[in-house]
Image 1: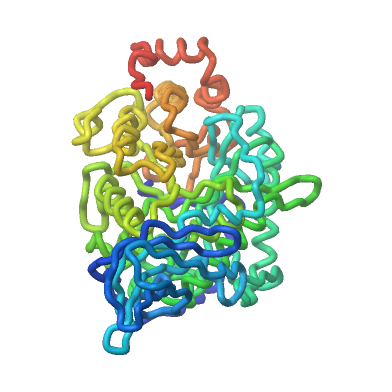
Image 2: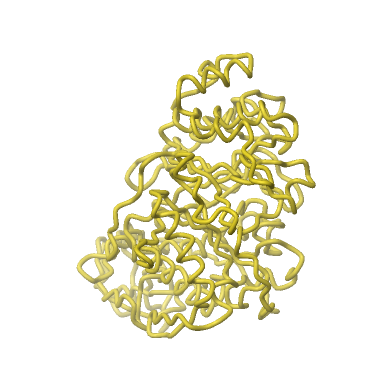
Length: 527
């Protein structure tokens, strides 16, 4: 969304503690491959690697080098050896949660030439971190209808969620809020970290209240300007204070280690944290916000270079993915893009181009089960008729924008063989943010809410629709003509409130169709 998002009831001023980096990192170059690594898997506490293809080595051996995410072989550690063979296999201790952990390493086969190691294979990461996930907690899968909840004291306990039938919600974690402070220790990979007890406790309470109402929680992890510098990409150093969110740091060793620790901590904490008779649980983690719109929502000054930018983001994504899945095997991990399907501009890559680059890069180093969080807003944002196509919103891969009206364009795109998950499934899409303003009329907003929920329920590839929002935001959104709440600022219900509550009933769908002047069912494109 092109407006600043707030974390309701958690707005507290924090000191800006930012460490800047003056050296701009270079894009990792992969060596030409004569040996092919077929896979890197965790098996029985070991990392097992299989390769094919024979290359001579001065010592007659292949050397498996484990490199950090910000390194390229032969830089790294020689962790296993095997005789040169057209079909070789390696095994090395995983060392999970120790200083010698290989969970985040990138593996490359090297040979000795002239007394030095040289890479002769592609590089691949572990692709099944869930194999060691110790918290196999059941997921909350009670419905797709979701809502960005008002968590203010005026709505204690978000009492309306159960009444509205909301089954999903999002919670945003700005890294400054949990890391600027002390009191909650966490030891990971042999290092000690401290997280901010005050904010962690606030999130415990918020997530616990959501979970207690049977609401599935998706946590959005973002790097804000006040986050400690080791969380922030070196590419972001020149833009501190000028953008909303910044790229996560997997470019430096300290950054990757700290990011892994934070993601592991959050996955551990919210795999069923108990408090006050509640159990705080997060099923889904979204890494970044609208990352294709790099200038505003994931700033890195390499943004104009799609290949370099995507590599930087994808490396951080994989660190978070391995950290989360190695704790909670049943968690889903999502990347996030906006509705600009075929629109590129200064500071913005089209979501189609970004997803293509992201998928290609991830697949080249070990395919994983990434999912997609998509913001299916209308274009423009003030258009509150979600059921109506426009010249820029069409059911075609050439469409400029994707809204709920033509969301089948997105799921059809993800159904291509090249985009399938490791299991061969179409990657699920969470419509994690979209809203409809009542500024142009409450009836249109109500119809749009019903239609959006109908679309989600009629597309098997969509796993949730989070409406933004429960209550109007008078500070940022309303001045832009966006009164997206089901409630106004005085907590009075709009027409959309009851329509949301009863969106799946035939009577409400008939009422909405009457208001729209068309049978909404006839506009659906089931998938």
